[in-house]
Structures are given as structure tokens and as C-alpha cells.
Image 1: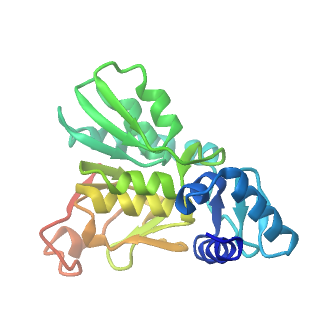
Image 2 (image 1 turned 120 degrees about the horizontal axis):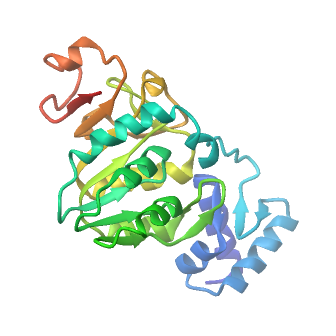
Length: 256
């Protein structure tokens, strides 16, 4: 592929997702990382993007996400109580997806050392699970984000798309039964959306502070969630006939 064509591809992708990595671009375009670095350097000099360590970002991109460190220290007691509820739905032999949220990290900590497989993009999850000898860990590769302590990008997404999971556990920035489930940035959004697509059953774990909130990106409709584990005061029609959900028999509400 010619340099001009590569440049157009890079600019088109970065305008869509906001941020790209050298490794992802090299894999997608089937060229060396050195070639991509030269392309990014040229585009940066032209003022068409901003080079970063390991990649580049759009000049209009603002990462709205909260760092893992900050999330891990927020509402910890509520999240720990909710994580214990998740364990009730995990069984021996299951293939389980865990996102990079602080809630999934607490699930990883609470997970008993049973024979199962965990698929995750979170370095924190991997660290917690590494001492549990019966658990097989599959790490999604890709571009590493120090802010989120996790791996993201095209490599991670493409790897996950080739898998079939029994269940996935995700969290979010906001949710409600009418607008759906929301996140704040492309990093987390892409992986969570893909986890939902490749899983037979999806569990949303979200504390009460996230109820009735929206953010930048919609992960999915509420009806795509099979089990909601939350301590929020969910509206009465959801506990009753659930008429506001397009697939009313699918979602199981599990409050603490």
C-alpha cells in the first residue's frame, strides 16, 4: 500500500475512533512498525494528528474516561457486595469474559479457584487470577493503556471476535432500562460491546450511582443484558411485567 493510501486510512480510522496504536496499524495495514512510525511522524508534522507514545490521537480527541486507580477507590463496599452476587452465576467449566472495570477486578478477587477459563483485557485481573491454579487465563493482546491498566485496540478486538464465551461480566458509566448501557470512551466501549456480541449470557454489574446516567457512547440496549446486578432502586415496572424492555423475559434483576 502506498504512503498516501496508508495516510488516508490512518486519518479515516483516527477520525472514527479517536486514538490508534502503532502495533494495531502495522497489523491492519500489513507493514512494519517502523513504516507506521514514519507515517505518523509525517502526519504529525502536517498537523493532521498528534503523535503519542506508541501511537497517535486525533486533534479533536478528548479521553473522558476515569483512570482505573480512581475508579478502584470509588464506592468499594457497594462494588464488593455486588461482586459476591456475580459469583453465584459462575460455574465450573465456564468460559468467562471480564472487562477492565474495577467491578470485574473485584469479581476476579472473589472468584473461587475452580476449573474455568477467564478471558480478559485487564492486567489487574490477570495479576489477581495468576495465583489461582485451576483457572486458565486468556489475555487479549493489543495496545496497553497505563491509564486503564488494560489492553485495547484492533488486535484485542479482533482476537475477541473469534471467541465464543459462556458469559461475560461488564460494568458501565451509566445505565437505565429505557436508554440502555453507556460508557465514556472508545477504549472501554469497543471491548465491552464485543464481549456482549460473543457471549451466550451477559451480566451487567453496576452500583446505584450509575443508575439513570448516560455518557458519550452507548454500549448496548438494556434488553441485551441477561442479568443486572445492582443495588439501585430500579423502577417498579422493571420488577413487574417489564413492559419497557423489548425482550421482557430475558433480563433477570438481581438486587443486593
